[in-house]
Length: 192
Image (cartoon, rainbow, N blue to C red; front, top):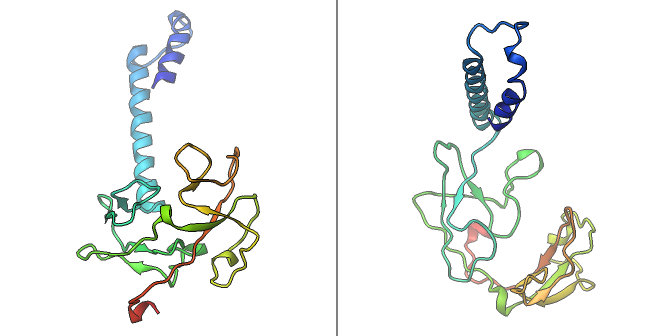
């Protein structure tokens, strides 16, 4: 809208010339154009939201570190339909092409998900932050990570709240890989 106003102000002097006839006074034409743009963008947003984009679930914590024992609540976005899938092992619940990951679980809105999280602040983690692409092999239990760095959590880029600085932050995109082995007891048969 500001750009339209700037353009209208820029041509204000020229509109007084009798070369162009507008069906309505110029300020009304500008407002009609603004209304048309607003309606068009709202329509496009609605089409994209309903036809092309799934509405993501809402999490009670916007992201980042979750302390052991903290509750993380999931709910559907307003107007969203369908099933929410989730994983607790760090995998994406969708595989390439949108196929559901066989390790994904179905979120039940009436139930409660209880998972014990590994405490980062008292555990040693392996990490790799060298710009390489590890594919998916690094997720395997027997993956050899002996050459990776290691350190106590919280790990990060030295923002004065990390215990272990994993290296300098770089411009652009670079993936950091983190691994930690831990034991799980009382695993339900359905997850074995």
